[in-house]
Amino acid sequence: MLSTRVRIAFFFAILVFLLLGGSSALLIASYHYSWIQNETLEMEKTDQRLMLKIQEKQREKNFDLQKELKDFFDDEDHIIGKVLDPFGTVIFTSDGFPNIQTFPEEGQTLLLSNEKLFLRTDRLSKEGEIVFFLEDVSDYWAQEENLIQKALFLSGASSIFLFFLGYFFAWRILTPLRRIAQKAKEISISSLHTRLPLSGNQNDEIRILSHTLNDLLGRLEQSAENLRQFTQDASHELRTPLTIIDSSLQLALKTKNFEHIETARAEISTMQQLIDALLILAKNDRQVFLLSEKKIIVLQDLLDDIFQHISQKLAEKNISWNSHIPEGISFFFEPESFRRILWNLLWNAYKFTPENGSITLEYASGVLRISNSGTGILEKDIPYIFERFFRSESVRGIEGVGLGLAITKSLVEANGWKITAKNGKNGGAVFEIHREPKFQFEVQQGKQ
Image 1 (cartoon, helix red, strand yellow):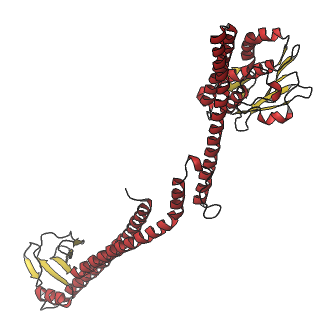
Image 2 (cartoon, rainbow, N blue to C red):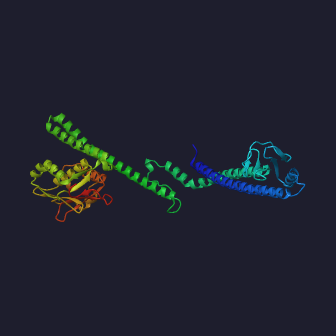
Image 3 (tube, rainbow, N blue to C red):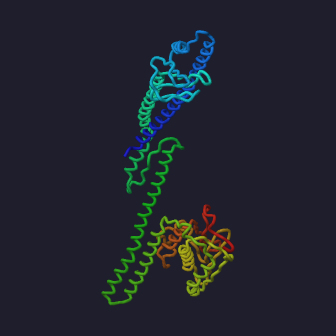
């Protein structure tokens, strides 16, 4: 397989050969056409001179056609002739006139390329003798062949020169790419902090490529760091319930107390929730839902369905449910992810709403808000609540593994939306889901 620089040099060499060869061919063809035109005019002039001479001599008493023809063709430097009477009998033939079978029509000229001869046929008078004019054009033919050879040599020599010149410049141009490739070979999972060298000005394509690859390395470095942190966090979160399960089972074996088994079963349930959440996160990481996967979902219908499943829990804490959703509001979402987003947010609101509190849903100006009464989120915790395994000190006693909001954020962004959190003016937390600017078709109002 040829290298890129060889292919570039070869391409330019072929291009130059075709350009020079084509130009030379056009020039030679133009020269050849002009020569034929000139030869045709010269042959016509010779024809006219012969006719005028014969017409003048015919008035003389001692007119001898053969003698006049011989004198005429002897005076011509390059043209010889042959004359036949009206019955086809040869009247005159110049010395060295070749035996050829192909002649042009009367008043026409003809070039015989193989014999390198230029011919013309005409009559001395309307019904008179037929005259064949012939010129040997070997010298011109040799000159034209010489021009063709020189053109081919020039094209070939120029192509070879351009090949090496193109190879040199391609080598110079591709040198930064070789440095980038060499540096890229040295980068491994443990050295993702390394960046590729930059060369050229701001608009240089190779510099732009280096910037792009460096951005990619930055994202890979961040992903690797996230994966490392995620692995550490997951290991820590799984280790704790496993330790409790092991201790509870040992105590159950020693004391025959089944309460310890119940403790182990509760921790197993926690582990199941954690593993399910981890699987969801692993599936949704970097996922982007396609248009074909999304559907128009009537918001109120979905909320009614979720309310049926959560209403009993709300009643147990006497939590009121306030919905201010305009009729006909629809979202363009992947159905299962949208359901999980709303369920996670509403369940989160339920967990952190005190007894006799309230949960409110409202939609306005393209923003869906879910808020609840209560103490809200600690201000110092707001930047971190969507991080995996984050658990605020103020909620340590409440059920959860610290992955619900991380899953919600992942699903929201996979659908091309954005989620934010803040504290309400009258207390409690407020979660807002709104469109990214590039997604202008996501919310539709009215009948679909």
